Length: 130
Image (cartoon, rainbow, N blue to C red; front, top):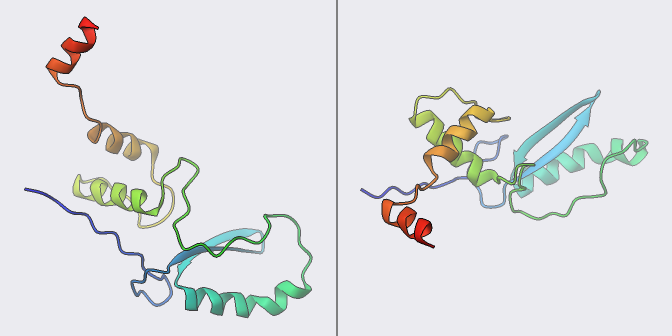
């Protein structure tokens, strides 16, 4: 039986699925936050912060980010779709994994091990003969 995994990007504020959901990062009182918002809600957030940001002193961080709508990869190179697939697989296999945040290394290792194809006996024989 074939299985098809469908990833839906959902706005954290209104809980609606949308194609234009992006992760917006911000900080306050030394704490970094990120929230997934559709274009309209991301713009609303930026408008709310605009007055404060325009008079604030910048202390670091990166230059203004582009408004690309694709999911940004994590430091390990996994994007939003891949991490969603890992979480879904982990839950089906009985692992306890949160909806957000870092996925434990043990779960990622188990996922990769479960999805790595092992060479067939014939392929191993051909490799040994080469």
